[in-house]
Every structure is written in C-alpha cells, then in structure tokens.
Length: 256
Image 1 (cartoon, helix red, strand yellow):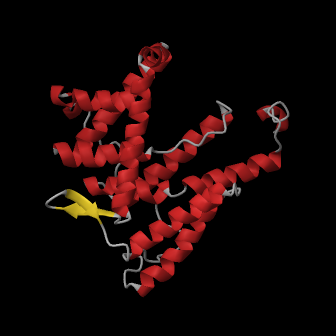
Image 2 (image 1 turned 180 degrees about the vertical axis):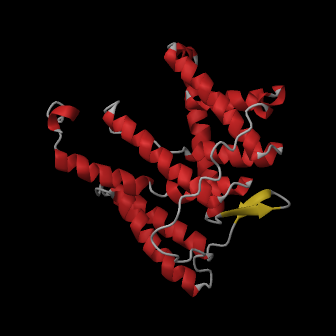
C-alpha cells in the first residue's frame, strides 16, 4: 500500500490517511441524507435517490483513489442539486426525467471537452473575476438554502424573505452549531467541523423533543433492499429541446 500510493513521497503514513479518510467521510456523510431530501422534492423517490447517491459516491471515490490516486471524495454537489430542484424543475416547470436528461447531455459535453483537452482552454479563456463570481454565487446560493432549512430566513409576502424566530428549534440548533464551529476554528482545534456536526446532532435530539418537533425518521432496522426505481429514469429526447439548451449549458459550465 505504501508503494502503490507513494506515501513516503507525499510525507504521510497509513494511519494518517486512515484518520483523514474517516474525517472526510464524517464531514461529507450529510450528503447521504441532504441530497435525497432536496431531489425528492422533484417527485423522485427518497429511497431511490439515496441508493443512487451512495452507490455513485462509493464507485466514483473508489476510482478516484485507485485509478487517479488522489485523496478526493466524489459526491453530488450541494449547489447543483439545489439548482436542479428549485430552478430547473420547480422554477421552469420541467419534469425530473427531462431535467435528468439535460444533466446527461451536460455530462457528455463535459466528457468530450475533457477528452479533447478543450476544457482547459475554456477555463483559461474565462476571466478570473467571472470564475470567482460563479464560485461565490454558488456558495451564496447554498448558504441561502441553509438559512431557509434552518428557518433563519422565512418567506414574507411583502418583502419576499424575512428573519425567522430565533426561538425555533431549527434556528437554535443552527446558531449553536455555527458559533461552536466558529469558536473551534478560531482556536485552531483539529476536526472542528466534525465536532460541530456531532455536537449539533446531539443537541437536535433533545431540542426536537422539548419543542414537540422531534425527528420524522422512524427506526425500521439496519438493512433494506436498495431502491433502483430511478434507474434509467431520464428522458434523453425530451431534454434536447431548444428551450433546454441554456439548462444544459448551465450544468456543463458549472462542471468546468
């Protein structure tokens, strides 16, 4: 293993990489639940999206480690799934099979751009301010969704959005977790994000029970049959309409 991954040249050890892998998993495992929670709002089954999320993350991360030999976890992006759900499906009134077809064609375009080394040239041609603006815009979009899920921001018919009640259990949990992570990061505590996630999760359990909004998750056992109902559930022909070209371009451009 040391020779295969060339650990000595990278000045690391097996134990360091094991702990780093565990930390990376704990920091990203929320995607297993959050991704289905967002995409299921389009009409897709929660269990089907969960199965796809786990399997694709596993195989893609495995290939990234064994083939590319890079310590990078590959999983669904929290910005793109929100764009897919709220902007494309709900905002434009497009069915999720057609939207999935658009994602497929965007993937084909991205593959061709990478194979013929056009992707690098496109990235170099895009002005740095625009690249930074796209990244910042996606980050702000994800932040806004987080505020909404925490009920820190709520709908308002007069001003579109407004500040929610601080006493709401979701908001309290969010604020405590935010300040805890900030303090740990300022004090340069290792695994600050992980500790914040664990403490916030433990806090959410009694908060939910005290406020009468306890979790809707029901214990049904450790094992369940994977849901493959969404396998090939995409409309390739329907997604090739001219009106959807901007959507395909948006997905492909974001992947760059």
